Structure formats: C-alpha cells, structure tokens
Length: 225
Ligand SMILES: O=C(O)CCC(=O)C(=O)O
Ligand SMILES: [Fe+2]
Image 1 (cartoon, protein in one colour):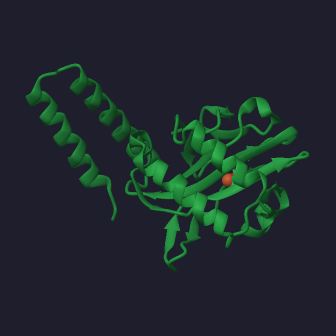
Image 2 (cartoon, protein in one colour):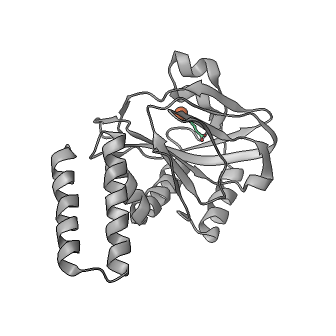
C-alpha cells in the first residue's frame, strides 16, 4: 500500500526545519548502508550522532504520531529515529530494497515493515528527485509538497531519480507495524476509514458498534506485540 499523508508538518515547522537543515553539516549517505546500497546511493545525510538530527527527528516523530492517518495506516509498534537526507548536483539513490532488520538506539531491533519519506522541499524548488516505487501494478512516481509524507512497503524496490537543479531535502524513517502483512494493514485502514465516514454520516449506532468490534477483533487476530 502506497499512501500519501498530507500536512504532517505545517508551513512554519517546514520553514524552521529547512533553515536549520540548509545551514547544517552533511556527510556521505553511504555511511548508513551495506555494500549493496553503497553501490547505488549518492546523497548526503545528517551525521548519525548529530544533535540536530535528534532534535528535528523528535519533532518529526511527534507530528507523525499525532497524525490520525499515519497512525491508522502504519499501526506503528516501533519507529526508527528519523534521518535527514539531501540530494543535489545529480545526487540520486538507485534501485534498492531497504534492509529488513535495523538496530534501534536502545540496543533493540526493528523489522522494517513500512518506509516513510517526509518531503521538506517544495517540488518547484528542484528538478528530478522523484521517489519511484515499484509494486505489482508497476512504477509509481512520488514528489510531494513540503510537509507531506508517503508511506510504502519497505519490501518494495524503489529509487530516487537524480536531482538536476536545486536541492531535495527530506526526512526518512522506518516503522515496524503491529500488523506485519501489508494487505492486512490495508484492509484495516479501509475498515477504519469507512467506520469514520459512517460515524460522521450518523449511521445506525448498533451497526457501527458491530463494525467497530470487527475492526478490533481483526486487529487482535493480526497484531503481534
Ligand atoms: O530519499 C528518499 O525519499 C528515500 C531514501 C531511501 O530510499 C533510503 O534511504 O533507503
Ligand atoms: Fe530506501
């Protein structure tokens, strides 16, 4: 499931983050990938231990965790602290699949079920830089307004096209979901959103109660904690 999450950050938050990021010291993005990724990754990132990464990462996580659509779509169990990347002067990231198991700062591990990119540059400020995600139905091109995010299965082959003008800055992160299977997560999201719509439309209360029970009982069957 590929899902656009609009307005994760408001304009003021984007402006503040961008001011900090535009003046930051960036390092080679290859520092956080294995040998396969290193062959195709040509971008820059905030250093892993950078205090700015920690500060802005907390702000991104707070915004995502308050976003009802992110919560409903991802059902997050563990989330890796966000990283920040920048592509310019032809920077790109060739086709790859994200690592399946990642180390958490507390020593634990995370299975990457969901990948997320939060755009921090406006699309008109750079050429290229599309995030291209492959699924069963073909290739999907993603280039979103600053402050919006895309979530997609970490298992999918994806790439970032070369940036040929300007710079593309983004935050990116991975989540382990309570529900490992992407298809099951999609069904739960569809059920959740139709329950919300029926509630707003004043549907029969008993039928809503029954549907809400179905949602929770499916989640009980499918979640792993
Ligand atoms: O910059 C992006 O949108 C995606 C980055 C990415 O695929 C990665 O770091 O694994
Ligand atoms: Fe990736």
